[in-house]
Amino acid sequence: MSLNQVLEALSRNLTAGGLLTAPDDIKPYVSDWTKTAGTAMAVALPRSTAEVVSVVKACRDAKVPIVPSGGRTGLAGGAVGTPGCLVLSTTRLNRLGEVDIVGRSVYAEAGVVTQTLHEHVHAHDLEWPIDLAAKGSSTVGGNLSTNAGGVAVIRYGMTRKWVTGLQAVTIDGDVLELNGELEKNNTGYDLVQLLVGSEGTLAIITGATLKLTRRPRHLCTLLLAVRNFTAVPDLFVESRHLAYDIQAFEFFSNRCLTSVKEKLGRKCRLTVEAPFYVLIELEGEDAYRLQASVEEWVAPLMTQGLVLDGMIGSSSEERKEIWGLREGITESLALSGRVRKYDVSVPVRHAVEFIDDVKRTIDDQKPVFDLYLFGHLADGSPHLNLLKHPHASMEQFEADGERFEKVLYAILKSHGGSVSAEHGVGLLKKNWLTYSRSATELRLYRSIKHAFDPHNLLNPGKVVDV
Ligand code: 2HG
Ligand code: ZN
Image (cartoon, rainbow, N blue to C red; front, side, top):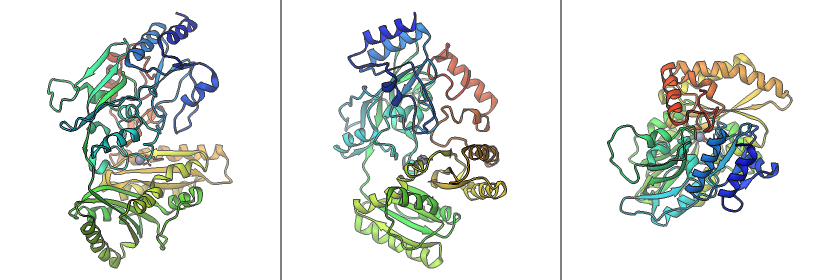
């Protein structure tokens, strides 16, 4: 089949507006938040699983690679279009089922926006607890295929914990109905969990049965200025003695705060400037008692000098203001130009030594960038973002970045860390996989890929080369 015949077949089988071929129409679909350059011969926007099947079969017959695409908020290049590919966007697969309040679950098609899902289940006082800064654009299918993390992992875990069943289309056009609503189904290999996090390289997720939990009662959000990085894990240890559930435990450096204030015009009410800030969110039954306990907890920490200043957000306005400082960091840094990003993880107890090693490397190498440090300390996953010094050339920045990267990953390995904590592998982490996965694991990855996709047509070149 020629490419023209493929395009004809696709446009015949898709509902009106379901095939984009003009370069300007395709452009928004070929990259993600990393802005990695991408390309595609066309974009298909199926409206139903049957339409996905017809797209997949046409591509398989003509050996056209397929790049599945959700909200394109990924940070590993997993949704970047490759030469000659067809981008299969799930945007129009956006139906939501009724909430099952007995089993606490809901069916969502892959293209449902995460925030839309949240609002849908909030009406029943329930929560799908995957909370990401990108939730206004990211999709359920994207969250599942990348096993997204976010700011509530300490309490709820990653996306894979919040799904019971998947519907997915294989490269042969078979529709897999995996597990449905069952909590228990102990019948061998778990294909649901294999597809979660496989980044569209094994099959195309078209829908999922998602698990729900109760919404938190009262939340209290604290923003604390601390004297150094060591104080961040120290505070984490302290906060775990509290008789409240920790909903989030985040941190950011003063550089990150300055960026959010300057680039996004956000305000911070703390009066003391500190090297690091910690955001802690706690849940309690009673708002008054929660706030009183928090104040009682912070007071001695201030006397000891561990905490230099603090504010407590109890109302939704105050909490939003505090979260705006943390969640605005990625956007504010992107406004400064090209950012080199490292989404790494180490065992939490190694966090201080790991960051010390990283800082020592930067002191030794004297690169033309600054380190912006923030992220999710409780899960041992700091985000390291590198921004070029204003007067340095881009060439020098990239060269220094690459030199730093090699040492960073060696340090990471020595601490038993991972090259991708929560953003996935995509294109950008693929070459570093050997730092986190053994040769035997990678051999099994290739065998699994071959079993699902023998002609390497599903998101080829992502996660692992075959
Ligand atoms: C976050 O935690 C996201 O805000 C983005 O994972 C991290 O921009 C980044 O490096
Ligand atoms: Zn993150």
